[in-house]
Image (cartoon, rainbow, N blue to C red; front, side, top):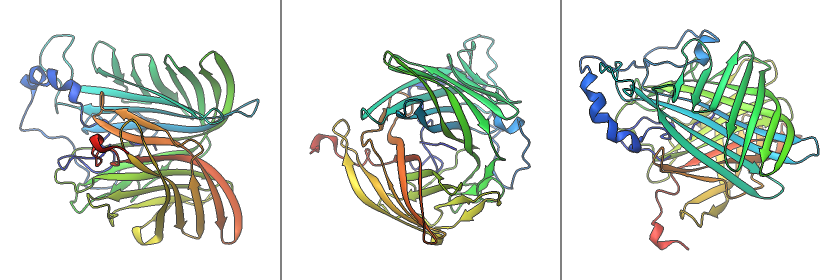
Length: 381
C-alpha cells in the first residue's frame, strides 16, 4: 500500500499526509451550511467483508482515504528509476453539500508525484490539489478510477494504469496483479492505537508486474519492474499520540514481500501498536507483532532545505530475516506543506541480507515522517 507527515494530536494515526488540507480552509465555511451534526463518518468496529474490484474504489462513508503507488523500475538499457504516485481523499462534510452551485464540494483531493533517477542521483517531485467538483478531481465507487486533473489511477479486473505528467517528466504505466491482495491486521482491519476505532481498513497489492513509459527531461525510456499499491481508509479519531512513523515496503529475491510500520511518539519511542505483514510464496499473509520486529537506524542524512534529519539506512530482524536497508539516493524528501501541510521522505531503497542463513537481495520503498517538523529550521547545520 503506500501512506506518507507528522501527525497532530487531533488526527488519526497512520499517515497525516492528506489530512491538513490547509489550503481548502477558505471554502469550508461555505460548505458547512450543508453539514448535518446528527450524522457521523463511519467508524471501524469490525473486520470488513471485502469485494473486488469494488473495494479498489472510494469509500465515501469514511472521512479519509488514499491510494499509494510506489515502484522500482529499470529501462531496457539497465538504467534504474523509482516512482511514487499517491492520491489522497479527505471529506470535509459527512453529507453532500445542499447548495446547488456546481462549485460546491464535499471532499478534496491531493496528489503527490515523484521520480528518482538512481544513476544521476536526481529526485523530482510535484504536488497538486483540487476540489471534488466540476470533474476537477474525484474517485469512482464501483472500481478504481481516481484522478486529480489529468493525473490518474484507473483499473478493472487485474490491470491498472497510472498516468502523470509534470515539467520534470511523466509516467504512463500498466500494472498487473499477480496474486490476491495482502490484508493487514485482522482481515484488513489494522489496529493502531488503544481506542477501539483507532484503526484503518488496509490492504496492499505487493507484486504488481509493471511496464510502460517513463519520460525524464528530454529522454524517454521503456521501463519494467515491480510496483506496490497500498489502499487505506478510515475516519479520524482524536488524541493520537503518534508524532511520526517509518514505513517499509520490501520485495525480496525469495519472492516474499514485507510491509513494516514503526509508529513513534514525540520522544522517539516506538509504539507497541507498530507491526507489519509478511507474505511468503503462496502462503497466507502473516501478521508481524511489535515483539517480532527489531529495527535500528544505521546512518542519517540531513536535508539542507528543511533541516530534517532522516535515518536512511536500517538493520531489520523480522521472522528469520536479517536485512540491511539503504538508499542509493539520500535526498528523496518532499516538502508538501502547500497541499498536505507536512514534510516527509519517500524513496527508492535497496535490501541485502539473509533468511535462515541463505543470502538474498531486494528493493522497495521507505517512507519516513515526523523528522523535519521536530527540527528548529533556524538552527540548521
